[in-house]
Image 1 (spheres, rainbow, N blue to C red):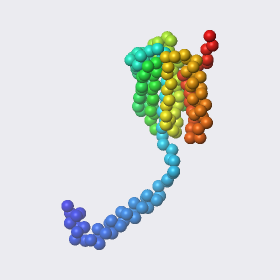
Image 2 (cartoon, rainbow, N blue to C red; image 1 turned 120 degrees about the vertical axis):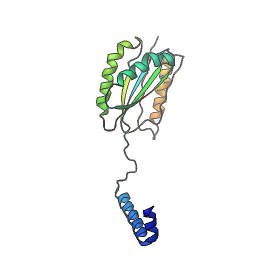
Image 3 (tube, one colour; image 1 turned 90 degrees about the vertical axis):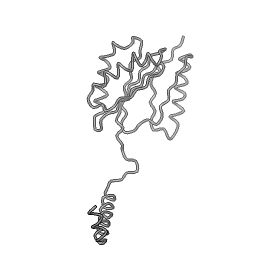
Image 4 (cartoon, rainbow, N blue to C red; image 1 turned 60 degrees about the vertical axis):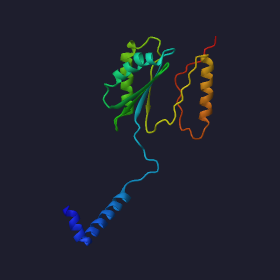
Length: 182
């Protein structure tokens, strides 16, 4: 209350104080570095697993939870998010700012290899990828109960069409193997 009373009784002081604050703010504001597209830390590691013909509940119980439990002990991981859908498990490990993504990805691979015997026998090897500097704007998942060869051909065709777009910086396709002719 005393500051307000003093400011009312001494308007010159109040105006000088306000002017000093504005000038100091402008000085600091113009002195800050500015970038059109500043680099923002999006250091993450993703783990994708495929366990064909299994329900989302089975994926959660048999794949996602054991993998989450194992990688949650790794230092440098800030947060773990996961999604379990039919035949698929997707885990995102968000890293603490400044942590080395390659080192933590290698530690995750090591931890996964230790828990691999506890996972179902016919599960595909989990795919561990580092996401550095930018985050994917779109994730596309293709699934079908139909012929796997047709699905693979469709995925390859979609990949080639997406690669031709000027706005696509990079494209990662995983989860499909070689064509099977029978």
